[in-house]
Amino acid sequence: TLWIITKIGLKLRKYSARSQERMAEVTSVLQETIFGIRVVKAFAMERFELRRFRKGTRNYFRTVLKRIRVGRLASPLTELLATAVGLVVLVYGGNQVLKGDLLSPEEFIIFLIALFSMISPLKNLGQANARIQEGLAAGERIFEVLDTRPSITDSPDAVTIDKVREGIRFIDLSFRYDTGDVVLDHINLDIKVGEVVAIVGPTGSGKSTLVDLIPRFYDPWRGRVEIDGIDIRKIKLGSLRRLLGIVTQETILFNDTVRNNIAYGSPEIPEEKVIRAARAANAHDFISRLPQGYDTLIGERGVRLSGGERQRIAIARAILKDPPILIFDEATSALDTESEMLVQEAIERLMKGRTSLVIAHRLSTVQNASRIIVLDHGRIIQEGRHQELLNQPGLYRTLYRRQFRDEG
Image 1 (cartoon, rainbow, N blue to C red):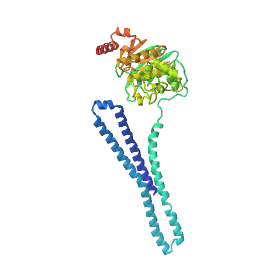
Image 2 (image 1 turned 30 degrees about the vertical axis):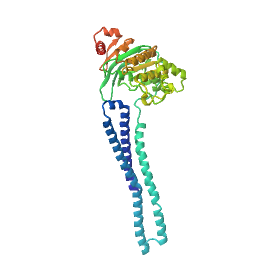
Image 3 (image 1 turned 90 degrees about the vertical axis):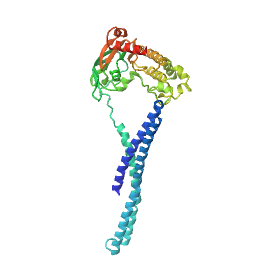
Image 4 (image 1 turned 120 degrees about the vertical axis):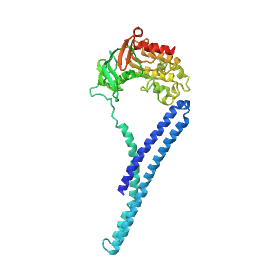
């Protein structure tokens, strides 16, 4: 009986794990379709997505059916086997009692009562094992995530810093991803406190990777990044990231109120500071027109707001954090002209007095930068102010002329 319970339990765990994988696939298809509904409609792919969803649900249904069938086998098989064993014992033992070889009739009856009283616990054991195996299958998927070790951790001698006094330095820095391709190659860059440094270059030149090394989303393969002369790997992660305000092209907002999205990370912040940050980000006017103002729920990923409105919320969040270092990663590249003007105005207001790194696709947005760094194939190939770079032959002038010719 225990052998049957064990075998059924193992099969049940396998089908439970598979059914959860199928459910994850169905959820993924559903989420993609809902968030990409405009693209689906634009390409008239509704029927295709419906077929994909139906295929996923059919696979899930079949796997769940197999799991249920296996799970339902435990109890009847246990009962059947136990009853069969009991009948064998009854026939054989009864025959021996009649011959008078083994037990007296009274002893045999007591033995039978004890034997048959074990059937119900064994059946319950099978049912309990089935539920345990289903839970173990779910637990394995959860612990795969929980047991994942972070690749970036604090070093034992990490220190805390609360402000930036000197600036940021990239020293002989090289980086490559797991694929082995070198993305940044021997980067040396010194950024002073209060300086606005723009980073430009073709797609794939390593711009985003360079700024992602500052908050330690990755660690360099060779070389180091320093803040105030301290290797950032020697600074506590929490302390390091509190120094940074990051606004990216893909704005991440949460399914919460406008107020809570702006005050993210500072839930106890006074209302007047939230409003002040929104005004500075050119966001207060459109927020005031929302149905519940700052208490309006903006939906998952901020779907109830336009792209420009989402960016201004993100900038207000950065303003409220009041960090000494700002990173803008193509924060205006996906916006229309009017939204870009409002966002750019808010960005310029936010950058005053702060050390800022600006990755820009539109070169018109970086003309006033203290310095422009031109990256190509992971190397710094040009450096200077806007007019200086325009006056010398090179990639910057090529990109600038091409962009303004295309826009013209």
